[in-house]
Image (tube, rainbow, N blue to C red):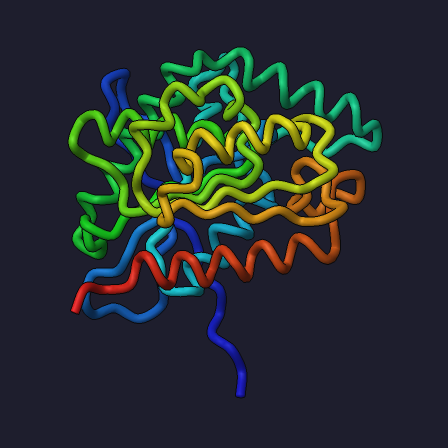
Amino acid sequence: MTSAMPPSATEIAIPTDAGQLPGLLWLPPGGGDPVAGIVVLQEIFGLSDYILGRCRDLAEQGYAVLAPQLFARLDPPIDAVPEDEDTQAWIGAGMELAQALPWERAEADALAALEALRGRPEVDAGRTALLGFCYGGGLAFSAAAAASRQGRAPAALVSFYGSALPGLLDLAGDVTVPSLHIFGTDDAFIPRESVERIREAVTAGGTREQIRFALYEGAGHAFDNPHPALHHPDAAPAAWLRTARFLAEVLAPQR
């Protein structure tokens, strides 16, 4: 038996307070009742082939997926940072782009993407989540806090090694939705001590059972990225399986 072809993306315009922002939308195969939706927020490298692949993975699992093109705000607009044999140069180029985009602008665009996805007729507005990687992991947390303060909290949050989280812990009281935070024990960018401070803050000292942590032994920062300098062959599939199970649980239709 052959599997269904992976769903392809459609380019859409996301309305924002600063004009339209381009985004890519994946809808799951089939049709029928409205489905849960997920806004995917990119790494510092933009909407790379890796991020697009993860969006397709989620669509194949039955979700509507929207990836805003955050770096379209830059001059010139950037889709993705091309991989470089010089890993440090590649990472440096990505960091420069992320630093060039004001955080407040990226957060506003993430919130606009969440509202745009909620407004789709194919989507169950009450079952929409934020999921981000690295730069996007911190941005998803920040956007979840802002949405919660507005009374528009997402249904769930997944943050893969959110790089900005150490500086965002004053927002932890605003993010009480079911959440999954994923880190590696050998993350040179977010040391274990910082990870434990994040755990303490976002779980309110372990009292928020709906907020979960997963630590992967020997994995470094951005370990889900397939780039040889970043990828961890054991942690990446294990973390993605955990993510799939978490999302299936917290975004299940209410009976």
